[in-house]
Image (cartoon, rainbow, N blue to C red; front, top):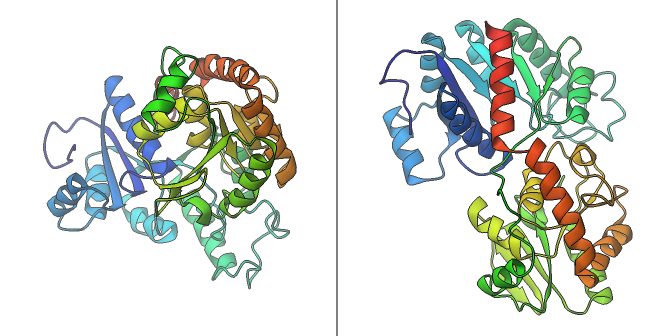
Length: 382
């Protein structure tokens, strides 16, 4: 892991996230760190919550003070690129006297609002946060006002992976001009999830090749609030009634269990999750609001057709009936029907998967994302 306390003092970028390695923000930070280095720019990582032994060694090197890495980066003239924090307001307050060259990627809206992940159903959002907050969040009005003032003082380059998210940021903090940078991931050159590769992938995952495999994936599993994890069981029951050969995997919780043809798995690392997508016949992705979810990209990259609610930026990733199937947000019956149809007719799913893989290979790769970010950094800071 790179350190700012050694090596040449050449300007580079420090990517900071809340979690060390799990979740979309940390994954994008890792991918950009590696991608910018391949493009010749020094890059390093910092984080607030340790999740690996390597991360603990890094934290020990900083005497348990992760903010020391940000301060050192700012002092050396490096860019500080923030992806997530457990305390956005506190972090911006601490950065203000350092006057760093600052970049912020908006993965969700907690920074730009009074604390809401996505406030799309809040009647107060377009004006100012209500106090008291109808969602029970503390000091929302004062927090939103203070964060907006800090952002205007710090003058960051603001990035967002969806146009939907960019529009929300502009509405939340007038005067900010977020730039669109779609998320990107490692993209296989060939489609891994087509026959006979899908049969082999199912066998490797311990699933019968005759099974119709449906995946539900979210960090937090059935406890994932915005990702509608509490709808998974009901969706599965509807799918199973229509397609008796269906096998369901609910991935992202904290436990491992099996109940008939329904399997619950905890969080999977990207490489393992990619193998599951290569084996699956359908991703079932309900979400009340979403920016540019990596889960959808992983499915597209690995040959798993996507069925999803058309929430937030998902419609910018999936074209209905061309690269996936979209239904209205909240429509359980419609989503279950769309998923069951692809399970019953694998050829239709393969058609969508082939188109999705081809479309994503030109738009959603880590290389495209890194080049776009480097171009924006060059334009903004030189």
